[in-house]
Amino acid sequence: MKFYYTPGTISLAVHIALEMSGADYQAIAIDFNSQEQRSDEFLALNPLGRVPALVTQRGVLTEAPAILNYLASEYPQAKLAPLQDNFLRAKIDSFNSYMCSTVHVAHAHLWRAERWADSASAIDAMAKKVPQNMIDCFNLIENSWLQGPWVQGEHFSSSDLYLFVVGRWLSGDGVELKQFQKVYTHQQKMLQLKEVQDLLEGLYA
Image (cartoon, rainbow, N blue to C red; front, side, top):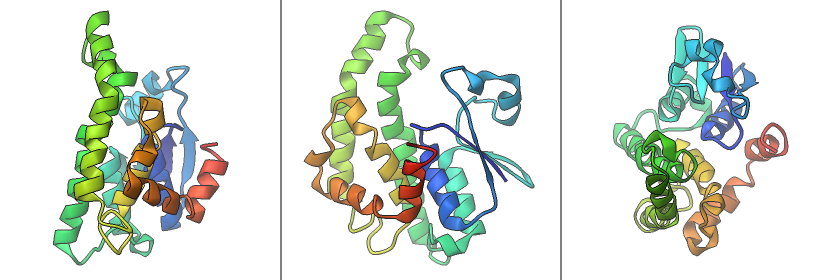
């Protein structure tokens, strides 16, 4: 497989999952600074021009929740999801969908507001709302989602990868992670995983 990623993006969640799975893959960095994601070659793989993208023998998969689901099924040894429990798998999908559709978008209003507005005043207004929006999202995660020690309770899942990566963005959004005690503890627990350490000391350093 070929895996297209960019440091600082949600592709890190999928990258950790790939490492945990033991899959045979080649990691290919996409340079956003040079607009490589808008190149004809990459757009042929992913017309959205975003990462992550995973090229498999059957075709290209995009969007982190979908790729995480695929890896959970293809590599059960990674234990990214309880394959025999449809309810718990739906709970994982529910959390990952919230992170993807709500929290990630709230974060993006600071960094990519031009997707939603053209005027400088509108872009500035969206940027000013980002810290409070992220605080609101993480208060919900802290008090309603994160069961402990992992997101879904006693068992690790792809939800932990999603929370870990998005949690790392908070400081850049002007939010102090330590105000969310359970999320902060979870972040420290994730940092103890070898796959996480290897990637943060290597390709994502």
